[in-house]
Image (cartoon, rainbow, N blue to C red; front, side, top):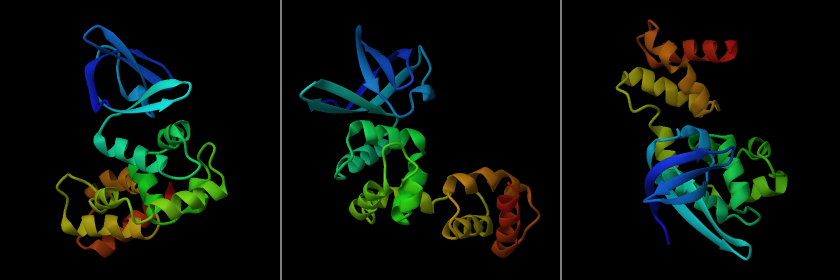
Length: 194
């Protein structure tokens, strides 16, 4: 029913925010409530879930995160609370990357996700996260040298998460390297050191 809410954040709690829209306060469950600030004007993308116990609103900072939430809900055994908990524990890019690569063990570290559920997530969603895979392939929207970009993609292909690679990117940008191979060697040294 709702696509998004535009209003002002009036309350932030550990698992939800309240968004005031023209004098009406909407309680919106969010995987990232502390990404907002009280008094901030926001546009929150909403998914309304109707159950026997009532109507609940789940909110996201962008349409991609809302889409990932809906994909998680399509997995047998994953309800809204589990999907929110999974998304709260990890950034969307790393989560999508783990699913695409079939990392069942990685997925079992999320709350309420055992080996069976993790396997089901991979089975149901692997190959269906095209938008996220494109985002993973674009390591950074900043203008960086083609050699560095190739090196960053290679590090991801070696099994490092986008989050880990992103963390060392500023140091690699300062590195005195001329080829992707040199960047990869420096990147591996940095990743193994941390």
